[in-house]
Amino acid sequence: MKSLALSYVWWPGIDSQIELQAKSCHSCQWVQKEPGLAPLHPWMWPSSPWERIHVDFAGPFEGHMYLVVVDAHSKWPESNGVKYIRSVPYHPATNGLAERFVQTFKHALKSSRGTAPVQQRLDTFMLTYRNTPHATTKEPPAMFFLRRKLRSRLDFLKPSVAGTVHQSQDSQQQHRQLHSKARQFVVGEPVTIGRARKSGHKVL
Image (cartoon, rainbow, N blue to C red; front, side):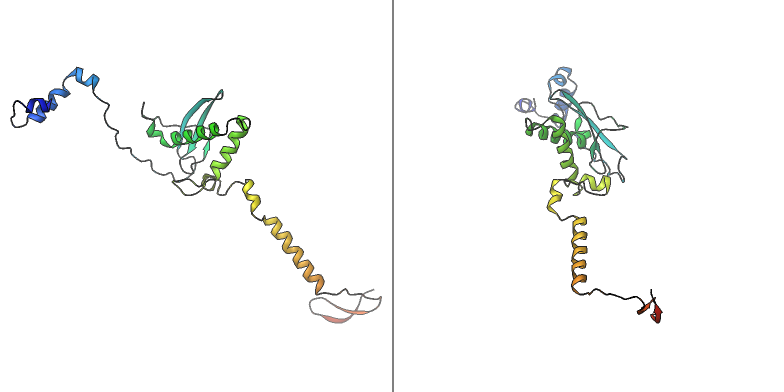
C-alpha cells in the first residue's frame, strides 16, 4: 500500500496515515500474520524445592498419558501433590520448563522403544535424568532435591567406602601381626597392669 501510494502522491505523514487505515480495516485484521513473539519474562529461581512447579501432559505414548511435574528449584521431574499457575492459552512457552522436559522425555522413550517394557525404560530414564547435571544449574537435580546423587551402575566403577574401610582394616591387621609377638604367661607370674603401670600384682 505504501509503495503504491508513494508512486503517485506524497504528503507529510502519509506512511503513518496508511498504517492507521490498514489497522482500522477489519478484513485486513483477519488475514494478517500473527504478531511476533513477545519477550518472555524469566521466572525467578525458587530458593527451595517444591516452592514452584511446572506441570504438563505427555502423551498419549504407547497407550499411556503422563502427567509431568518438574520442580523449578532442583529441576527434579516427578508427579505428586499439585498446586499450579495456569499458562497463557496457545503460548506453552510460558511453561517452558515442563515443555522442555516433555520433549526430552518423549525422545528418550522413543529412542529406547523395543528394548524393554515401557515402565522399565521410564525408570531408567528418570534415574539418568535426575543424576545428570542440568544445563541451567550445572548440578544434577538430585543434588538440589535430595542433597546427594542417586546410586547408579556407574557408581560400581568407583571404590566403595565400605570396601576401602575393610581394605584399610585388613592392612592394619596384617601390619600388626607382622610387628607383634604372642605373649604367654604362667600361673603366679608377676605382671604389670593398669595405667599407673604398678608392678608386683599377681594374676592367677
